[in-house]
Image (cartoon, rainbow, N blue to C red; front, side, top):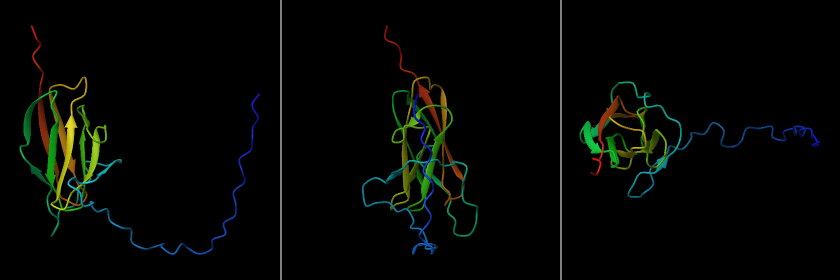
Length: 155
C-alpha cells in the first residue's frame, strides 16, 4: 500500500506591499528584427476584431481570395494589418497551420504590417477549405477559399 502524504501547509506571506511594478503598463509585443515575424502559439479568436472607428484600419487580404491548389501543396495566407498587430489565422475545415501544427495560429505582423501563416493539407482533408484571419487591432475578418485538387492516380 502506498503511503499518503498530506499536502504541505501554505506558508504565510512576508510581503505586505505590492511589487514595485504593480500597476505599471505591460510591454506591448513587438516583432524582432528578423526577416519573418515572430510566431506566438496560443488560443485566439478569429472572430475578435476591432470595432469600426476613426483611425482603426481594416484588415486587408494580400493576394487572391480564392485559390485552387494540389492537395500536396501548402498555401501562404497573408494579410495586411498594422505593424506589431497580433493576427489569428484559423480553419474549421481540416488541415493545419505549419508552425503551430494546429487548426489555428497567431502571428505578429512585421514592420511592414504583413502577417503570414502557412496552411497545409492533412490526411482526410478534401474539397473546399475556408481559412479566416482577424486581428483585435483591425476592423473586419478576411476569408480565403482554398479548393484542393487531388493528384491523379497512376495507371
